[in-house]
Length: 152
Image (cartoon, rainbow, N blue to C red; front, side, top):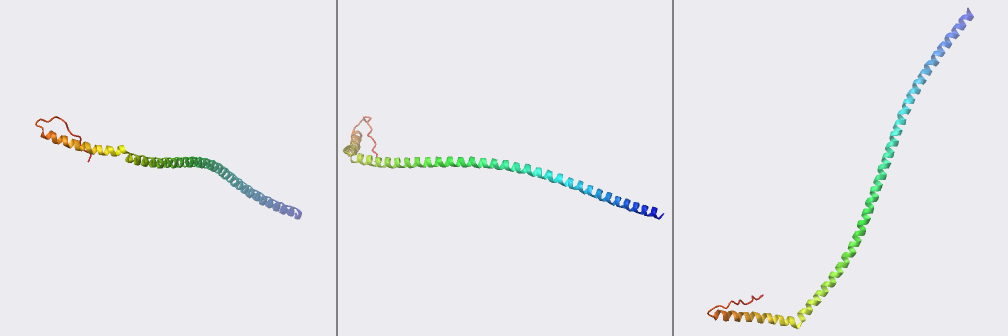
């Protein structure tokens, strides 16, 4: 029986070892399932981050397009401002020349003999009107003439 007891002891030891291995396998399977769950979670997070990255990339491209559009509009406005500046300078020069021409024409008109004669005629007309007013006042019946009013 000694041999039989030794075999039974070895069999008990093997059964204990198998149970220990089974427990270890169970723990490893649980650990593997946990790791698999974590991996799936990480994979989902990675996919979400990938989607967010693509969305951000799309938004960045949109912003880049809008920025380029604004830059083009700014360039157009800058070109228009330069054009307008050139036109304003041209108009300013034309106005300066017109002012000089106007001053020259005014000077010529003032220096013209007819302008002096006109001034004398205006004064003469005022005197004539005054004299007619005096004559009209002395007449017994008014003749209906009204002398022109003088500008002064």
